[in-house]
Length: 443
Image (cartoon, rainbow, N blue to C red):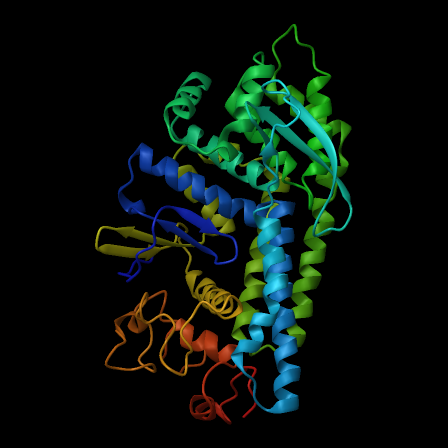
């Protein structure tokens, strides 16, 4: 695995689907069972992004969003020969729509005073899709908790956390009762435990349930089928998890049958990106990420589940060497390392995508110091000698995997991301004239 020191102070553990980076507050090279379970929880979110229809749909919306910005800026620059980066803030509404889809959750007060663990089904007008959709809510005390895309993601990741710790149902329930776990992580599991105590393996059942529900652009559709199938089961005998999902997929074979056409669509999408220029490293790397989605879907089609990979790190590495790994930033005290779980050198591609994502996020939300004054990351991440040599720490530019140099200009990922997006001052852009460099701003 690749390793470097990295100067970042990310708090907590998380995987951001739009940043393509997994952040940890410990080192994966020396994990006990507890740390491994935390890592597995976040790695599950990475799997959801490239191995489920819900995740891939959201990823594709994001890459289309960036591609549209790229095209719009090309037109604007060609017409005016320059542009104000403040123009990017006009994309805030579309950006917020993406964030809304990712964090979609409609938790609300229990005004009807329904009884605890009651499952409420309701037709709701979707803010983004502009159509009526079926939503489910689980009532617990004074709240109605939405069985949302976010709830499904976090519940599935919570089950892999339990699998990694070799928990039984009783262990999981005790953990949820004694730990400060937010409702979005546990309401579905608690609902199953309360209303279907005869399920033979509650952790495995909940995992399969969420993994299956995420194989749709809109999970509510499959949720409707799953809940109906569950309610039809006998309440006088043990519910076998394996049998339940075998019957479910036999009755609803279209769910798995939609995956192969999606693979073909992704292949066409990869080919279409060639029109944006073979020398544009960003879109070359986007194609490599979409290829991960193809590999992830094919692996799911073949295996039908990833459940059995989470029990220990060696099994998970076998999976990672097939579908690859995100870049993993591990900050422990003052020592930070960056590595990948797989044995291949793939962080090169991810780093530039990460750089562009961070820059767009900053410019669209206007959360930055203007770059013509100093690097927007100078306070948080010392990145590039181009911006104020006396302030910037250039050591990071000389280390893998964050010394990405797609234009052979010797600068850091954020410099190169700025170059791709045409955000560098003219005096820097002019350096790349006649050097066969693909970027937006014309020379």
